[in-house]
Structures are given as structure tokens and as C-alpha cells.
Length: 380
Image (tube, rainbow, N blue to C red):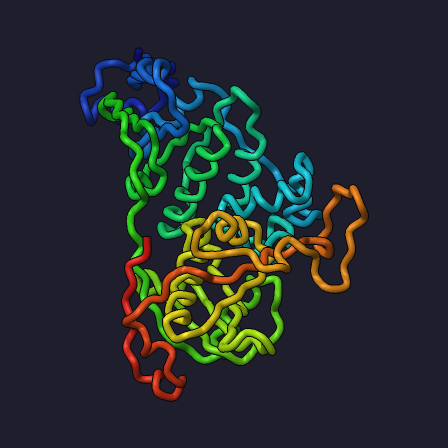
């Protein structure tokens, strides 16, 4: 099937100049034919399709032929999360986290005060959260206005959510670097009419470097965390991806009369541009592994639903007696189903996985660490 677009030419001195200069014969109309060979898609089960090609290749035209290209508007007077009033508060938080927008302070800002990357993730969250059963979401110019690292993390977060929720989506993009991260079931090129069905594969490995830092590094991350006060005294680490700072993790002593060498993961933040790749769970697991090797028992408490759910399903973590309970001084009425930020139960866990040897130098006193080179990790 071809999509044929024709238009009558309104002639004037400019078009006449083009005719004479370039020897154009057809002076009455202009036309373009765009191949749309997507019939085989109808006979297969799939969740994610990608229409890929350069500008002017016909991507948008094909999407419009498939249905309505969706968009959304946000109320500038409301906090971002208040725009998701078609969900209950718990579902809205989990949806934003699923799209890699897990920075709690961001949820309380109006849409127009977000960065380009945050705005794009917010739109994606709204659109995919609004898909009704049996519908296919169509999105044009996917990742065209964001940084390429943001595009990769956004693609990874999106495909995980779509597959988990059993939804369907078709995206049009001119960027080939998202294919491995988006992991589409099929890719169509309108340039040559080629349709390729792909096997699902794991996303590419993320190679991080880790640096031991002083607590002053927290200043770069604290505005993205729901606790912004001074962090407890302890050991702090910064992680980089392609020499770009992406994450911060720290742990501190946990005084206990019954547990020796107890520590707690006191802060963990992934910068918004890199959320949705699992970096938070990977880096906190790594720090827990090297602390375990040093003889520590590692505990953690978080209200972040994404990180909490990971630990809930991980064999490396076990719940403590405080898991799922409300914070001190809070109460929940019997049978109540409503939720507020003051009544959110915490995910409380102890690390029970293996220790990791070979990184003992990262736990030396900070004075001995200042001139140490970065340690390279290969996290999957």
C-alpha cells in the first residue's frame, strides 16, 4: 500500500523561475508517494512498533493514517501530579516513577517549571497512563527534543512500562540510537518500505565509574530527594556514566544495642535525566555488596515505590519488622483506602546478598581517597 499525496501548484514568478532553471515539466501539481507496508503487523502479537527515518520520509503521514496522534496539555496552576486526576494518588506516583520521573520534588512543581527532559517524561506518563484497553497510542517525534542520554533512559523506562501493563504503542522517530533501549517488536522504514520484526533483547550494559566523595557532593543532588536536610555523617559515593555524573549513594552508621557493625543507606539519588534505567537499584546494591564484604550489616528505609518494589522482589533483600509500617507518629484509620504523603508506609529492608571483594579501597578514610582514580564498574 502506498499513501499518495497530491497538491495543486499555485504558479507565480518564483515557481516559473524553478521551472526554467531546473527544467521541471509538470507545472500543474506536485505529488509524493509514501510506502506503508504494515499489513504483516496485523497478524502478529506485539506491544511496541517504531517507524524510523529521516525528516521528510513520511513518518508523520503514516502515523496519521493509523489513527490520531495523541498529545496532552497541563494546567499551569496545578502541581504536576495533580494533573493525573484520572488516577488515585498512589497510581499517579507509580506511573511517574515507571516513566523514570521519580524525583519527588518535581511532582510538586507546575509543568512549565520542569526541564525539557522532565516535561517530555511527564507527557509520556500522561499519555501512556490514559491508554484504554484495545487502544494503540501513537506518538510522533519521539525523543527529538531531548538529550541523547535522556532519550535512552526514557526509551528503556517506556518499554518496561508498556510490556508490564500489556499496552500497545507506535512511535515515530529519526533517531537510530534508541532502538536497543526501546526494544521494539518491529521497526518500519518508510524510506525503503522495509518492515523488520525483532527479537526482544536485554538493554545494553551500562558501564559506570564510581568515586568516593566528601559529603559536600550532596549539594548537587539534594533538590531531587524528598529529604533535603544535611546528610548524616558517613561514606559518600558518586557514579558517572560516560564521564557524566548520574547518581549519588551514601551510607551511615546505624547505632544499635543488638546489631554490630550496622549501617544504613542514608541517601540515594539518580539525576532526573538518567532515571528509568535501574541505576538506583544497581548502585545501592553495589554499595551494599562492598559494605557487606567489610563486615557490615546494611539496612535501608525508603518511601520511593520504584526502589521499594525492586527490593520487595529481590533475593538480595529481606524485609525487616518495620517494613510496610507507617512512619513514627503517623496513623491510619481501619479500613481507610485514601493516601497522603504523611501516611505513606516505608519499605524497610536488610541486605542479605553476597559481599563483593576487590573494592576495599573505596571504604578507606576519605583523606586517603582524594587522589585515587575512578573505579570502573560494568553493571547490568
